[in-house]
Image 1: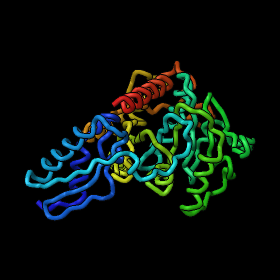
Image 2 (image 1 turned 180 degrees about the vertical axis):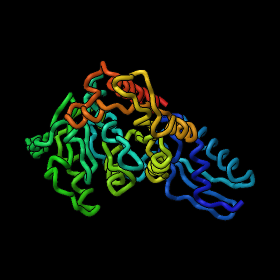
Image 3 (image 1 turned 45 degrees about the horizontal axis):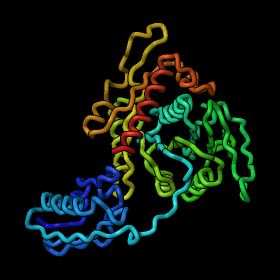
Image 4 (image 1 turned 90 degrees about the vertical axis):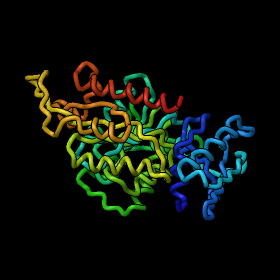
Length: 355
């Protein structure tokens, strides 16, 4: 078998470091000294502690994984390094935030912003400190969803630095690029301008201590996503899609972006929006107008959790347009669906942390 770097990386992705539950690649333990010479492979693994109780077992498991993946004749030389040899990591923004959740979709029009807004409201209703960043630079919709079209951002001194004060609704701290441009004005910016604006909303705002920071990302994959992933320690991503095949095909691309070895952000799971239509006069009826259980099938194919299914009902649209997220009322069917989604996300984040 001809050896190449990706083959070694694939093998190391099957080995988990017991201290965090992450695989060796996801944990960033592979040093940049990977060398291949014929059937001989050599590299270093950087361990987070010195001494590390898992060092010997992990090295042995890594060697076994490579031989199983590449052939028993492969010669493997692994050097275990202490943490002081690790390359210095760029300091990430928002150190006072416990969990950062990116809500994404492969295409527009699937209700990603609706899910992000109602998830944030539901988390706040559960008693958590929550922030919501509308990172959809070119199509911000959060101001409308929270009836904040006329909100004028202002600054306050925090120490010796002036910081932007987020708006607050339903217990959620909110910032959007829509606060800084006129609603009828198109945001015609090149990638670097959009990325810099986003950095300011993250780093120059007084978010304070938060349990959850929900980011409504732009649809698709773009410079904005890369900026977020470079600047923030994202806990995990939620992928929103409708059940129809054209949306699911784009959802796969979004999943692939987060699972790329250079990004490696855990997928918390999928949310199926507009899962079925329920008319107000027939609340027990379900009409699968966009297809049935498409997200559930995709989740099963990819081995990912289905976090929730949100029905298509008129009240969701009306509440969003009126600036009153439907999740603010936990007694309605849709409000309960979003509250349950929030609890599932909380449980999923806890399981990742304890893995």
